[in-house]
Length: 146
Image (cartoon, rainbow, N blue to C red; front, top):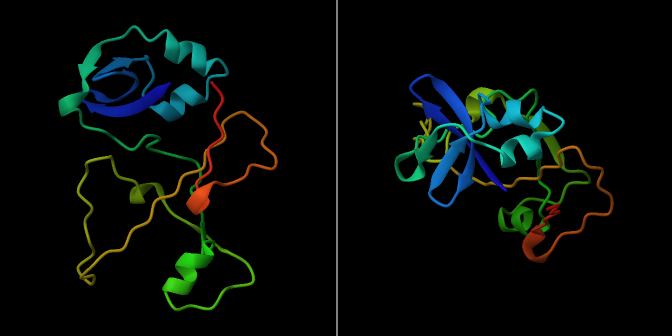
């Protein structure tokens, strides 16, 4: 099941993605949808307005998360390629919702910056307990429940 949050004339809307079409679920965003205990059923029965995704304006998936907790210095190869010493523990830090952008939004650099570096990792466990979740090549890890 693929979900997205789109910007609309009236705000934002959670959509179920089917091919090149998004079908509104009736929720303001994916975060609101996921807070419903029966979110899978609700999303699967989406019957709201349909939107063509080819020209969609994607918002951040969950525009106003309660917390964004990040872990840095957790990939040995990357730490070594940066010429840094391996830390005893990974670094924990927070980001703020204002740091989130939609899939095709412009990333604005502060005036004191001349370049940017980026990384993207995502781990999401929603409503499920997980233990001993291993990684594949390059640290890639997927826990799928369909």
